Length: 120
Image (cartoon, rainbow, N blue to C red; front, top):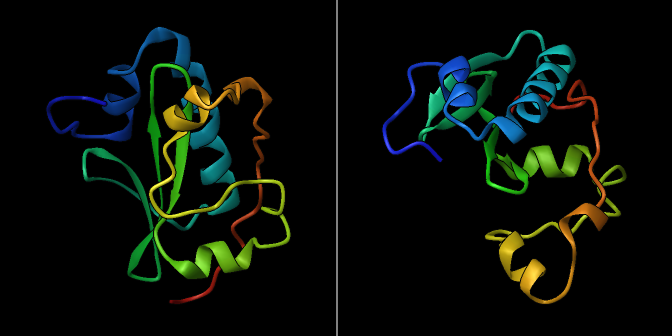
């Protein structure tokens, strides 16, 4: 994660290791395609998508993975059927999972539409 606050999502992605930049561009593109009306901003030094006046989703790039952070329980509830294969918890630490023997490459990743999310 960048030490200084990036001014834009472009700046954020450019500050990441080259090995993950194309993946983050794909994540960004997927979010923008699914929710074109969402406002794209930087909050907490990471890309944030706002919809209906509030944050709905954040993402962050790390050395060996990326993370999606739903901003509220409505986002998780909207996708509960799509997220059955995923570990959903507050404060999930993927490095702990790796230390416990799970390989990040073995964890499923998904691209789901955010159209089902309404006002909070």
